[in-house]
Length: 558
Image 1 (cartoon, rainbow, N blue to C red):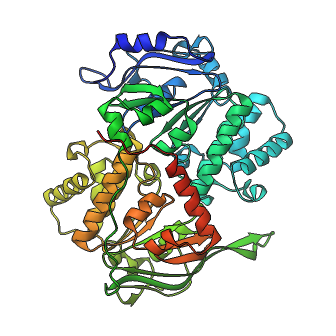
Image 2 (cartoon, one colour; image 1 turned 45 degrees about the vertical axis):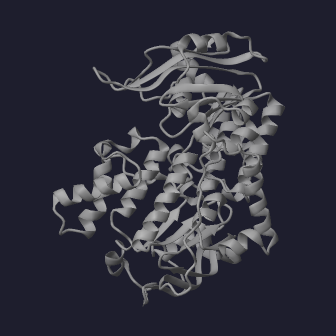
């Protein structure tokens, strides 16, 4: 049962241990107008003291991000409205603040790290311009001073060769690198309150650990408060002083972090703490036929300089990698951001140029042009890392999932296509009744499930999964892992599973490729790599992953 308003007010009436910086009282958020609005958030209350970290925890669609966006008044008004509530920051009610006051606060006193960096970064501006913008506006820094500060921030968040990245654009960075740029932007003006919406979702485990340490250090140094929104319970336990658990737009439990993890009271909290990917990958089968194979695969990007754009070197994104993906088997590809994981997957699908033989079902395809590849596209699919960036905002969910059928299965009738679309949505845990909605009407986790449905509807033989669970909360991660395992067993699918989440890789992969700077550091059966890593790099990667797991909440029986 959710808290009553009387109980909530009694709890929040007690004087906090530290001076209150932000106070949210009885906040409600509705979307849509008329007789049947959607009640996204209902009577939510919480406080954050100076230097304190409060975590909002819950599954996708629980109202966490909507509550956070309300603080800075960033919801799509007037389609969004607040039937009740007030948001008080440093004594001022932000819900009644003028736009000029909000502009002064945004990015200066309150900053936000958004969940999906590709849609939050401007594709037309360089990294230097975007990180420097807030400092120039709020601090009046000169271009020279701003550049020095940008370099300092990029180095602090773990961007390699920060000087060389100043002139880069967002599409030239990996997913993890884009997220680090977002963090640098948010920290530029040393805010009093940092709202972090899944701040490490796209980061590999070693960089995740570095970013968390950086945030802890800045919190201590600046006495900065944080509102942390995440589905990663290990991060919550490491970072948060207090926790509010949300579901269906309401806070159902709150308390000190240790109390929530050791003695949860609400059934939903117990369910959340006990959810994690379980089970074993299908048994390795050396006799299974090979679906995709590559030998000494290379993807080198030329570095051109000077007036004549002469090639002076190469970025070796993938450098001499051997891959063999068998029917009904999963190859897990792990490594830090920028290691070449996604580039390897794109090369196997012939979505980017590469050197070296690529064989699909016995036929060499590395010399195929786009017309020759078109008939194979149905059999070779990909689920991209950023669902919001890969789903067209102009198409409904039904149109997005149906699009491949219109191209590849022209013999199907409209009714048959709709039946296939509904079946695909059901397989990924979405209600087919929602198929006429648009991507912006779904949570991040729901959008990822739509992207998976779009790939599965064509019944492929080979599927590249690029961080398919990174945007999902833990219980949905477990469901997707079970779904992928079940689909693989039923249809003998071959997977290449790219991820920084080694717990998920361990549950799915038969064999593993460990990449660093485009080169294979270690390769072999998954059990052998996990239990007896041979290289120092693999050992460091596993240590970072499972050290964070060890600090997370133990499974709690409900």
